[in-house]
Length: 202
Length: 168
Image (cartoon, rainbow over all chains, first blue to last red; front, side, top):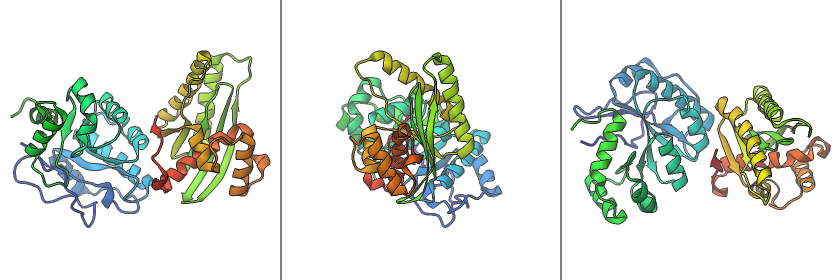
């Protein structure tokens, strides 16, 4: 069971929540920072309605290199985190060059957090894990954490296909081969189910 | 965007508040020092630092803060005391939800005035000239803090100049 938790399909209006929900399986409600409007607008009733049905909220987040002004993004993020907290949903985070802003925004959020497409430093990876966040490593970036992950294990770690179009099972095998760490597929799946609050399910 | 630069020390903490409206559009809106007398015990110094930073936050509502990266010289006692000052300030910022980045002092000075080893006086003169204010309005102990704020503004608006500092 893998979920399409990640599409970069631009939406005409990020305030209109995703309607293309798969009939089965898991799905997340995207509110991508790239597609936010230039000024803050409170998400509408449709968003809150869909959030209750979604398995997670995301990608949401902050991107200093793309999207509206960072202050607008922060306001959206805080609002979305509050909504996710209230609805008891985990969040998938897109974060580019905004570590401190992200840490500050997540301080009051007690739900599960998954950092998507991580390719930062080892130090930052350890910080995320110390905060109890799940970290999904960007395709190919696993090589640079091989030593660290071999020493600490894969708890809280995931892999993703992102925009590559590559099959996730093939990615897990490639990670296994290139890092020398076995069991990626199984552990990633376990971690993902823990993130989504369905640990113990098949 | 309002950036709060801070150069922590237990006795003289420099601060600078810079408004950055866009690439190369920076304005100093305040700079100065939070001073503690030498006779004050550390607990009182920390209380005043925490309170002083909070007052400045209330006044300027900064979007983020830039601080000096800690360093350890030969004297470990000095490093511990500096660590206390940093801790008091970081706690004040964290409680108010203000994101904090840290930069090496030399990186900040190079960003602000083009020379990582510039003396405080040089930094003050160059910043005064660049930002068109009277040099007498810039206390020397606040020059590092201003450099930190400007460095962060540059990295924010010109990502090609380098990465942001470490998240604190």
